[in-house]
Amino acid sequence: MPHMTPASPSPGAATRDFLTQEHGLFIGGKWATALAGKRFDVFDPATGERIATAAAGEAADIDAAVAAARAAFNGPWAKFTAAERGKVIWKLAELIERHAQELAELEVLDNGQPLAVAQYVVNHIVPEFFRYYAGWPTKIEGATIPTSPQGRRPGEVLSFTLREPLGVVGAITPWNAPLPMLMVKLAPVLATGCTLVLKPAELTPLTALRVAQLAAEAGVPDGVFNVVTGFGETAGAALAAHPGVDKIAFTGSTEVGRSIVRAAAGNLKKVSLELGGKSPVIVFPDAVLEQVIPGAARACFFLQGQNCMAGTRLYVHEKVHDRVVDGVARIARGMQLGHGLDPASQFGPLISAEQRERVRGFVEAGRREGGELVCGGTAPERPGWFFEPTVFARMHADMTPVKNEIFGPVLCVQSFGDDELERVAAEANATIYGLSGSVWTRDIGLAMQMVRRIDSGQVSVNMHAALDPAMPFGGNRQSGWGREFGKEGLEPYLKTKGVSVAW
Ligand code: NAI
Ligand code: MG
Image 1 (cartoon, rainbow, N blue to C red):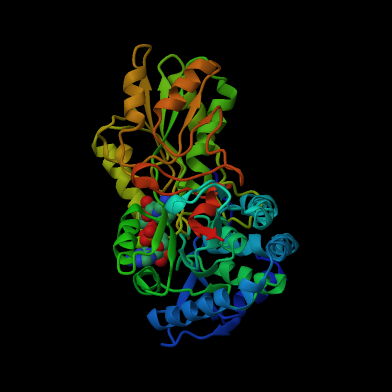
Image 2 (image 1 turned 180 degrees about the vertical axis):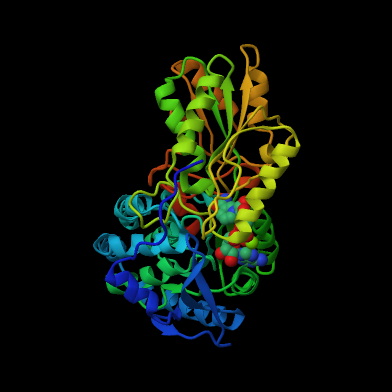
């Protein structure tokens, strides 16, 4: 049984002050109440208590936000030079660092993650990502193309491409990592000169509202970044279907991803999708177990397993199977569960009671179908939506928890023998997903062979889920459409115009 710490240490003054404000929608640089006047409650998942309320925007509010985004796109934002856009992005990175403690506390209270995780995210991941994209506006270039249209000879026509901002972007983000999700949409929007209407997850609306204030302070013009808090079925669906939106960037469940695609068909808006995952972690017998064991535990249990990249299917060679399973289970049992603001906490709650029931259902299925429960599997007796880190051994490819994205702290272990490379490679790809994956071995030839065989947008060797602002990230198969991060991450926000000039 993992250790538990007492609930609910209190946040700093800036955070308390922000929580007591009556938050509106951020549209055209101004705070607005939702037109229908509705609000919803925001909960601390570690206590189950209400900590704030937010405005419940609906279709009419989305209309207003899209109009503001269009006006900014055609107006003041179009007059910014590339260098000026870069400066604004850089300034936003600085402001996020300056308010790091407050943002980290809000993220903890909203999402449940341990403070150390949130602090790392706010002090490093988010500012570095914005700074990476701050360098791009001045480097977005077209090409000159050697053409001879309509029989013209060389020198009679000059042809070149313009890379233009796509337009008004709608972003819909999930609750598992609210700030990084916002960052991944906002940075390329600002870098390319697009404008944004963001609909953050209803379970975690807070940090987006705070970043909207900071973006305004950084000099992002009114209407360039709009935030409409509200529910998926109302605000989210209206944004996805809106005829004035040129592109939707969605991160969330595969099921909702499909409904986004259908909604986008009306005006054939561009769509990029970052969806679920069920990523394999494959451990060969020569791997360095002192790295494998903590690495495999982190791969699955980071963000309480509520992580699209999570390494939830662990394939271990039979020679090292028992040592790896024992080691991972020891880490799982020793994890300090607690309120994220408690510095001793290493493992927070799940996002909601509903999510916990979903996870519990998968654990019950694993038991029923004959998995060996090595540790965890229950919810501790305490307030909040905690669930113990759970390890199942002796799993098979056709078991429910192996096939489905659980989005909770449940690791499914299978073993393989010397002659089973083909089987493991095939099983690694035997889900509808293809997002991440890792291979652990000192044999570089074997590693590269596996890298080739794993059909996912990301494969890491001797680490899992190696993210970097410069490295493209995204899903194959039903894990998504397109790539975020890096230079490739600009593409979904740009359109190409071929220009030919005769004289
Ligand atoms: P979800 O996909 O419903 O929520 C993600 C976002 O989509 C939220 O902002 C939500 O308001 C919005 N949304 C929901 N329905 C919509 C609609 N019809 N039109 C437009 N936007 C809509 O995810 P949910 O229900 O919170 O979680 C359920 C499961 O989804 C999880 O258990 C997990 O398996 C998966 N998931 C995967 C994520 C990932 O990054 N891979 C992130 C969140 C959830
Ligand atoms: Mg949903």
